[in-house]
Image 1: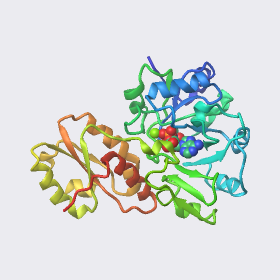
Image 2: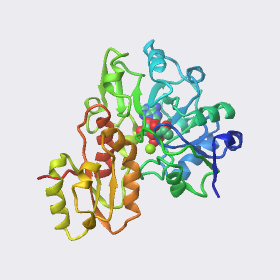
Image 3: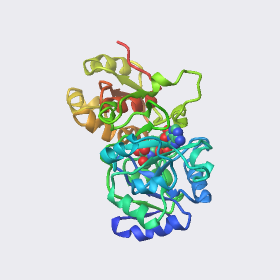
Image 4: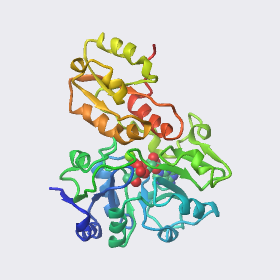
Amino acid sequence: MTERLEHTQISRAAEFIKQGRLVAFPTETVYGLGADATNPTAVKKVYQAKGRPSDNPLIVHVHSFEQVKTYAAIPNEYVAQLVAKFWPGPLTLILPIKSGALDPCVTGGLKTAAFRMPNNQATLDLIKAAGVPLVGPSANTSGKPSPTTADHVLHDLDGKIAAVLDDGPTKVGVESTVLDMSVIPAVILRPGAITRTQLLTVLPDVLDNKHHVSQDEVPKAPGMKYRHYAPEADVIIVKNRQDFDAAIQWALAQNTEVGLLATDEVLLHQDQIRFKAQFSLGNSVTTASQHLFDGLRYFDLHPEVKIILAQGFEPKDLGVAYMNRLEKAAGSHYFNN
Ligand code: TXA
Ligand code: MG
């Protein structure tokens, strides 16, 4: 049985980590699956519990920039400026590591590693109490939507991990921006809540992964090549909300139950009776990002739904991260009028 712990029980959670056991922890983005980053036996349990391919490296979660310096070489003066501006927060920095400082099971054998200081007090307290940084991939079964509540974590991992530290639903809802600072100019390997525009207030130049990696090259963030976030039903993106009526007509003609994942504005406009399965994304790209993974998981509880029509947003600012995750869930399948 996996224990559900609260903020007052940090010392118990830290005890589990010191014993080499797994504890899921809250962050502002999604829940992470924590283990002692300095204990290879514990780290290997993370891959096992998630069913994650072992060539996909993990983020090392720290409580301070000082803790990063134990493991990483700081390649330029911009790193400290990014940390000052965006930590704690949803920005992961890829940095060159000091030789032998981290086991290859953390880094996937790369000469770099990913570091992040999450903006969640319970987890920062846990990292301090454990006395070691925590590896932390999202605490879901590999391929499933990332967990944004402790219930999601337990749905996927109950019985496989010692505990989940429950701090309620996460605020951002999509995973951190991953920024490769080991190259010049820096490259965004995964879009997140810290946008390119925000990064350009510190850095002279920032490239997007899609401009950087050619099709047949090995992807730089190894995790990006795997199928992700996929519910059982087919997800189809409806790019513009004025296309919903046509999309619904088409979907109903497929003679199957149709699910709607859309803003209140779109949902209120529809006939409630025909759509037993619908999930609200709220009223903006911010609330949509918060609720996206919860929504994708919701439809797995309704196996009669075979097609999910999901609302698209303009791919700018937070919309870049939202559309990145939704496109993965949909296998880039768009409704064409
Ligand atoms: O918001 C988040 O980042 C969440 C919370 C729990 O902190 N964590 C998370 O971890 O999303 P994960 O393991 O699901 O995603 C980490 C991403 C993967 O795409 C991985 O391939 C990439 O970061 N990554 C890790 N180390 C890397 C490295 N040295 N070079 C390039 N990419 C790396
Ligand atoms: Mg993940």
